Length: 373
Image (cartoon, rainbow, N blue to C red):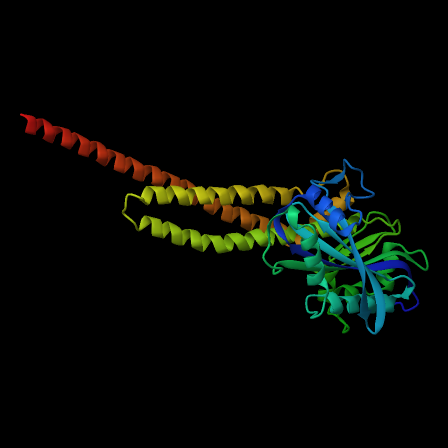
C-alpha cells in the first residue's frame, strides 16, 4: 500500500435499504414530507448520462435527512444523510462521510471503521431510527406498510474524485491494495481470493475505475460523476424487492397446498365454491406480484450508455438479482398452474352437480307422471 498517496477529494457512503411498503405513491410522499419536515424534496435522475441512454422507469424521490455524528476509530465525524424512495416500496437510506485530505491507509481504515459502526454487525447503528422517521413522515403515501424492518440490505462505497497527483486506473491498481479495501481484511489474502475479489473491475476512460464486490465497491471518478453509485443503489433496491417476493411466495406455496388439499377433501355442495374462492385469491396474488415485479424489472432502463450498462449488469449478477427474479417467476408459474387447475376443478364440480340435478328432476317428473296415472 502506498502510504504517500493522499485522497484529495473523496467520501465514504454507507447504504441501508429497507422494504417499507407494497408500493409508495411518490407524489403523495413528496407532499407529506414537505408538510411534515418542511424540507425540499426532488425527483432523482442520473446526472451525467443522456436521458435517452439511461433513465429511471419511475424516478425515485430524494429526501434530505438531518446530519448525524458518528465516532469512527475515536474521531467524531459528521455524516450527511438522505433517503431515496422507490415506487415499488423500497427506501434507500444513505450516510455520507467526507474522506478528503486523507492518506490512502487512513482512507482505508476509515472505510473499515464506518463498516464496523453502521454495518450489519453494529449494535447501535442509527438505521432503524432513520427508517422509522421516514415511515412516519410519508405514512399516508404508503400502500400496505411493512410491519417490521426485517428485510434489509447494506452496502458500503469508497468514492474518490481526486488524488494529490493525477493517476490512471492501471497505476492506481499498482499503487494501492484494493483487495484489502474491499475485503476489510488486515491479513494478506491468497492470490486466488484477490483475483476473485477484483474480478468485477470496469473502466471507461483511462483515469476512471469501479470495482464491485458483494457488499462493497470502490469508485474512482475524477469527473465527479455519481451515476455509477446510483446504478449500484438501484441494483441493491431490486435485490431487496425480489428477496421480499421470493420469501412471500416461499411462505405462500405450503399454505396454498394445504388449502387445496382441504378443499379437495370435502364432498359438500360448497366444494365448488371453495375451489372458486381459492382460485380467485391465487389470481389476485399472481396479478399483484406480477405488476410489482415488472416495476422492479423496469426500475432502470439502460440502452445506449455501454459503460453504465456493464456496471449495472455486473452489479445485478453479483447480487444474484436475475437468479432471484427467475425463482420468483418459477413460483408464480406454479401458482398460475394451480389457479388454472382449481378453476377447472370448480367448473367440473359445478357440472357434476348440474348433471345430478337434471337427473333428479327427470326422475321426479317421471315419478309424478306415474302417480297421476
